[in-house]
Length: 111
Image (cartoon, rainbow, N blue to C red):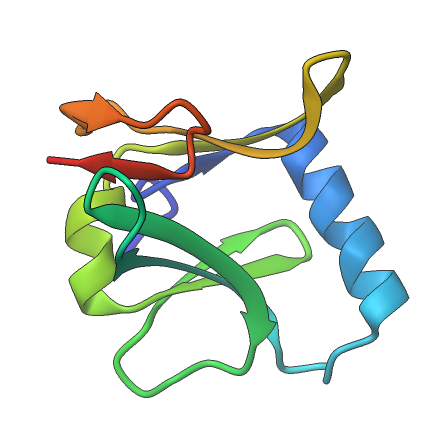
């Protein structure tokens, strides 16, 4: 699977590198991006550092590895992961063109 599954902005990549350096996970770990049931709109995004699993899609952005399980990849195809640190809050932002509805916090969606 190529890196066109999702896009990650330069600002998000910088933040991922910074967090990985401070948390110091194992060298084979990468950023896991997943979709789980829950949240006010039915589905929620989940990101964490973890080791790869057998059926993961493995994407590489320079020195950052991203793991996406096959079930989540259906919902994540075409998203852009960004990082914002403005006056309206700080954190990772998911821009999902597949989402039909999103909640006010931007952390859950429905398709």
